[in-house]
Each structure stands twice: as structure tokens, then as C-alpha cells.
Length: 180
Image 1: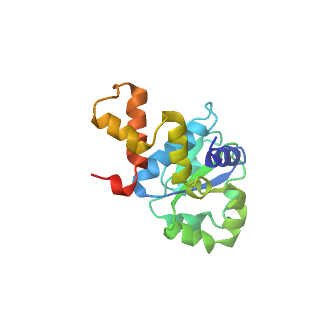
Image 2: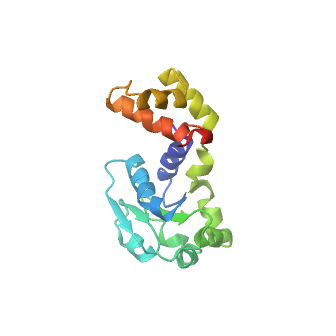
Image 3: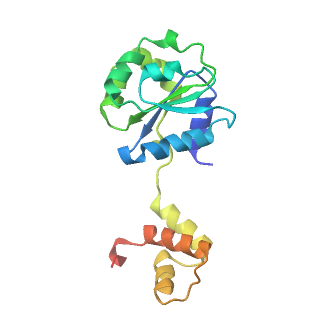
């Protein structure tokens, strides 16, 4: 299991507040879906955009807070610990990695100390190792990504879902000199 999945799962067991960093605005929805999929399936899930909306959710509801104004959200959360103590299920705050909200968090010592163990950075925990990915592909497919793609171009592979999945992985792993 990926380290970030374990970290998210562990953090979700420790309400009231979790902070998850994500890489790109286009990946926010995926990050929210991943957290919801890791959470206890009996928890209702509600997506919110303000601290007030998060606080208005039931204490047993997983609130996924994607703030419109990350800095204002951090400022509101800093020093507001007592507003969350009754939560049985955490509020998960999503901040753009390297964005204004993450920078504001470093300037909010009270909040930072409060969430330190529940600050999850999936990219830092699950770094992509292209050499390891290539080795795993070769072990699984029995050939290099480039060899696999050559077979695909010659029509030697079937159209099964596994074959298509391996073709996709091969495209992601092929060397830069092999790009057509």
C-alpha cells in the first residue's frame, strides 16, 4: 500500500482536522475522491468551501474543505481549535502545494503545531521512481516498454484490458529518445 494512503488513513482516525496538500487545481477533485475512498464507508461525506460550512456539518460527517481563499481559511483556523473539539470525524482541508495557503500555514504556528501529525503531502510520500517503475514493468510484461510498444505498433498484441493497460504504462515509461 502506498505511504500516502496509510498516512491519510491514520490521520482520518485522529479528528478533528487534517490538511492534505495537492499538486494542481485540476487534481483537487481526485484528491478529494481519494480521501473519501480511504475514509470509513459509514461516514457521510460533504464537500464544502468555507470553515463555516465545515463547522455546520454534523460532527460525524467527513467534511472535505476546499477553500476558495486558502489564506483566509488558514487565518480563520489558526487559533480556532476550540471550534472543532466536538468532531468525531475530521474536517479535511485541501491546500495547493506551494500555494499561498501552504505558505500561510507556515506562518500560523498554533495551527501548524495542531495539525503537524495530520499534514499529508502525498507527492512527498509517494515519489515516482522511473527506474523502479521500468523494472516492475519489465518483470510484469517480460520486455521493456519500448519493446512492448514496438509489438503494439506491429499489431502483435491483443486488445484485452490488460494489454491496453500495459500499453498505457509503456507509453508513460518509454525513454525520451523513443518519442515519435
